[in-house]
Length: 197
Image (tube, rainbow, N blue to C red; front, side):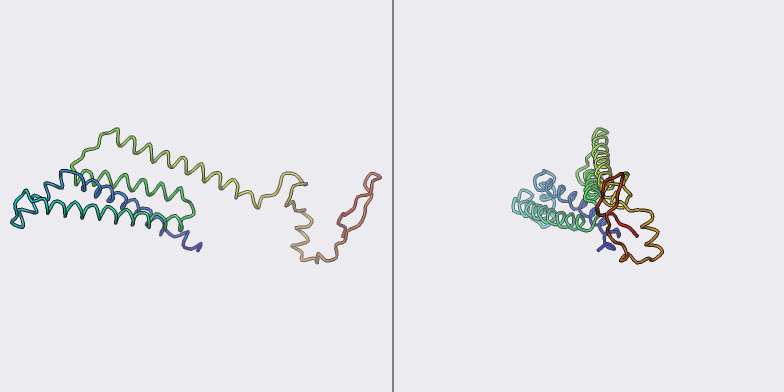
């Protein structure tokens, strides 16, 4: 499983998920736009039907609606799979959102002849930058929490403290079975449970 997490499979799935989300939006728009009516009239003429034939238009709009649902389902499947393979859900979300925005801009220009104003690009950049900042904050918290597991404590009384002499004896291969608990006097007080060698 660790091999899968380190491979770029999740990255490919996240980009593909963003692309499917973009196509989902395109097909949703084509279901309702007047551009579809123009295409339906051209297809009707190609088949020798009258341009006002609404039957062809309904079929094309139904096809676009079905493709909208199909790409939506594919997008969620790919996104969910990318989440299970990646070590960070935030990274998957950032890649997905970035791919979706960029491909949506390209498809909008190619299919709908949309020109996006500079404000759209600034907003898209801010959204992606915000996602990256949030992602790095969350990753920092995870690293900070998980990264202290093997560190030595600052105080001797903290849990997990290891004595340097105990480390040396482990390295030298001494048998730990000869350790015993005895009572020792410390400043006139008896202290139980002190390990002596």
